Image (cartoon, rainbow, N blue to C red; front, side, top):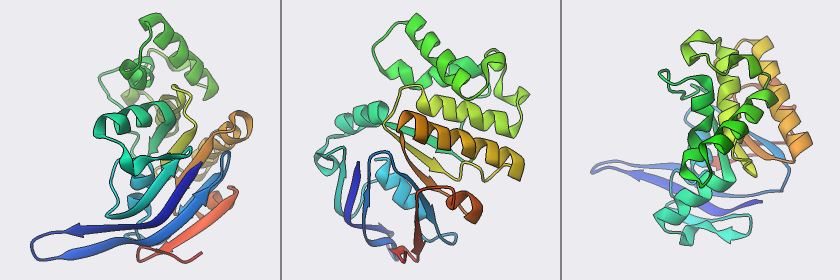
Length: 221
């Protein structure tokens, strides 16, 4: 589903050159649940952003679903992200002025479809994460775990083939973290969604199919 070949990412300023990712090659199968671990600053989030087409590699190639992404235009990338990928972030990135249902609908605004269809899909996504009774609430009225559930609903509302999760349990206590992890495991098992998750938590990482470790921008396991 995802193939990275010799990925390198260099950040440059007038005086400093920083090698964030160094020659990573990685194959992720369809339906796999992969976790990425490593110390802070090792390149985990940079690698996830490259997989999610939010950042370009300085060198190397990316194939997703057998398509060579490095040849895509900005417009093609935006369309591909919207249709194929779902994103979950540690800090939720919800819009506090919008109700839960409206937050979940947001990715669908960039697709064709009626307002009724968007509302039905968002309602179904929220039901999947156990929030059918919170549709009209605002994010500030929810707990951290509930807000992360909203973020997951927003990520899955467009039925993406791939979910990229950056520390999805990082801001939660262990009980809430386990609940969020159970949702991700069920999405992977029941819907066949390919999931790549960055985490600092060994316990969460060992619940996934495979663990990749990074150190100083290189893969060490």
